[in-house]
Amino acid sequence: MNTMTMLNIFEYDKIVGELPQSIETLEIDSRKTIVGTAFICIEGFTVDGHQYAKQAVERGASLIIAEKEIDVEAPVVYVKNTKETLQRLAPFFYEMPSKAMHMIGVTGTNGKTTIANIIHQLLQKLGEKSAAMGTIGFQVEDELIDTDNTTPNVLETQRLLQLAKNRGIETTTMEVSSHGLIEGRLAGVVFDTAIFTNLSHDHLDFHGTMEHYGYAKGLLFAQLGQDVTKEKYVILNADDAWSERYRQMTPYPVWSYGFTEGAMYRARIIEMDPAHTIFELTTPKETFEVKTQLVGDFNVLNVVAAMLAVHSRGYEWPAIIEKIQEVTAIKGRMEKVETDLPITLYVDYAHSPDAIEKAIEAILPYKEASQRLLFLIGTGGNRDRAKRPVMAKKASLADYVVLTTDDPRFEGEETILTELEKGMTHNRYATIGDREEAVRHIVREANPNDIIIFAGKGHEDFQVVGNEKLPHSDAAIALDEAKKQFTK
Ligand SMILES: CC(=O)N[C@H]1[C@@H](OP(=O)(O)OP(=O)(O)OC[C@H]2O[C@@H](n3ccc(=O)[nH]c3=O)[C@H](O)[C@@H]2O)O[C@H](CO)[C@@H](O)[C@@H]1O[C@H](C)C(=O)N[C@@H](C)C(=O)N[C@H](CCC(=O)O)C(=O)O
Ligand SMILES: Nc1ncnc2c1ncn2[C@@H]1O[C@H](COP(=O)(O)OP(=O)(O)OP(=O)(O)O)[C@@H](O)[C@H]1O
Image 1 (cartoon, rainbow, N blue to C red):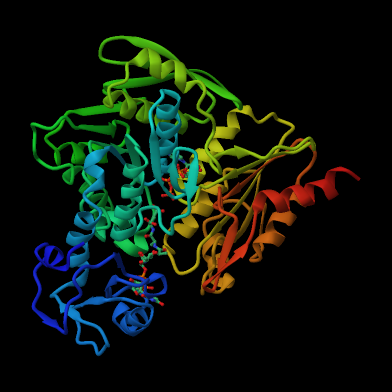
Image 2 (cartoon, helix red, strand yellow; image 1 turned 45 degrees about the vertical axis):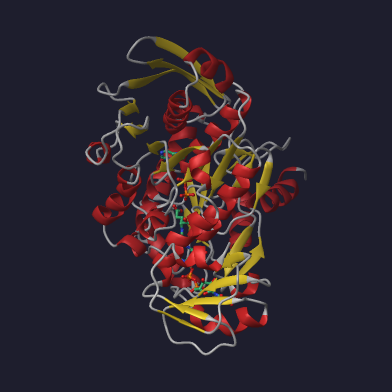
């Protein structure tokens, strides 16, 4: 990009040094800086990017954008606020890629990954070139690109969207986290459809109160804009009271879904077993029977929300209902671990109280009287502490519980376990800080034919200890221990 063109995009206070003719790329991480980069210094939660300007110059940055005085061997453009500058600059630099695609945003405490992946699978089955960005990474058709966050920072988001646009992607579905909304990571992303799943206790370390947390989610609906000449849709969960608040934040048509009587698109479960679900979907015009491989009441709502998003894209119901049958379970979401051993193992990403309750409730109806449901749950260190006892209380719905850690980071396991333990409502449980040992212990506790749910890690294959990502797989450890236990 021509440097003068770039300087027309945002306001600056002063320029020190001789500007290059053009810049090749933008970067906020000195470690990724290459020759010809414009490096933008961002003050983060942990460190201040201004400290890394020198390193960026050593790596070839030809221009620095800063808000504090720095001393570097490169031209510097001083602005009032580098975060805001980046939010204006990145979408322009990457040529507003979201405008070239149909964009679907999914927000809510639980279900974002599931819905985004159902939409992605469904659109591909309908012959569309689709991408999905979220907790699992960035899926561009069948390729998976690693990302650091559910909603990546503004630069990464724009860069990935441009990549999708360049590959001819027609629809991109993004998981929109409340952190992403509050931090302006979605600047320049123009959505066409916005979905709300549900709101329950999570992330209060960041948002403080449920009111603030709920308000943050609402920004997605406000961000759809006010241009009523555009055809945009809002898809809200009628079973969740927050939907009424979000309805008021947008002028666009609202399609509500849920089990509740007032829902425009109402689901009623007809049949459900551990391998499939059949439900009836009543739309304002007609009623359809829908078959899906996903299980659990909550997944019926996830499936309906995803089908509505695809309908908002212009696909007719018969085609959607035919293809939804082929959509498979999502990695790490109530995912059954394949084994011939006499034990049923599920890995699930539940790490909020509501998700834990839903995961257990998905299994209880099929559990025979002779079987026990064992549940392993941990919480992260240096994150929302208030949810710990509430999570353990929900986990107490299981017959036997193991309380452990889930990314302890820098926090001692003692505090995590003690705070979890406060919520237990029965005494059939163990506390084991080391997650590998906890997994092995719960398998050893199981009798033949019992069911174990390993909650919290889902698709993740690591455990964050300190600031290191150590390899860890609940499924692999559980299978190893189960072999010892059940092939004697
Ligand atoms: C609290 C938070 O949101 N942190 C995010 C933030 O990190 P940070 O502010 O600590 O960054 P920092 O380390 O202080 O760095 C500041 C600046 O210096 C730069 N730097 C740093 C080191 C260096 O050597 N060179 C260098 O240039 C960095 O690139 C950055 O520009 O910016 C990083 C880069 O964009 C994010 O990856 C990081 O997310 C962390 C990993 C995180 O855990 N975030 C959570 C809270 C989060 O955002 N979660 C939601 C999902 C929630 C849900 O489950 O629904 C999400 O969307 O992921
Ligand atoms: N609609 C739902 N309502 C309640 N719980 C759900 C729902 N959908 C999924 N869950 C539970 O929440 C867990 C996480 O699901 P999913 O990954 O789809 O949510 P998410 O919103 O993407 O979570 P995160 O923001 O933490 O990445 C699942 O493993 C399941 O236990």
